[in-house]
Length: 128
Image 1 (cartoon, rainbow, N blue to C red):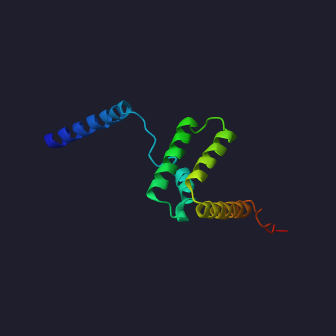
Image 2 (spheres, helix red, strand yellow):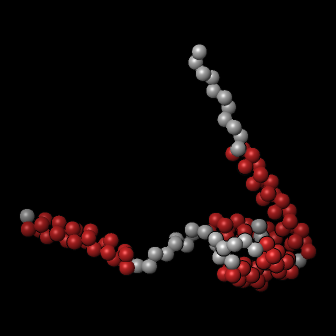
Image 3 (cartoon, rainbow, N blue to C red):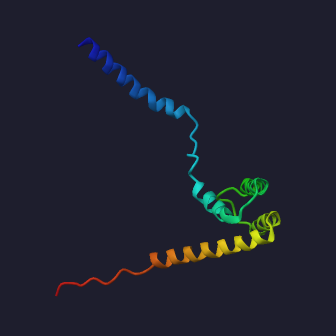
């Protein structure tokens, strides 16, 4: 009986201590919170056969852009165009052509998905 009371008291104390300990820890977003966007961007470069140097250059350019234009900041079309021009300068002409094809495929899939999601539901028969 005394062992059960000790265990119960320990569990009770731990249940009160854990929330307090969790509050002391800085709240960080899970690393994958914004990952889908980054992954989508990197998928555009997937089949371009980039060299390790090109991958690093593009990653640096994108990281610099994201640092200067954090999520939620006012969109800057000029900065986005500058990023695109810088990325294009890293690519070979064949890679630029393939990137354009990748983008067109992405847009087509995106449009198709939106078209199927916006289809109105079929009318249902109502009882007379």
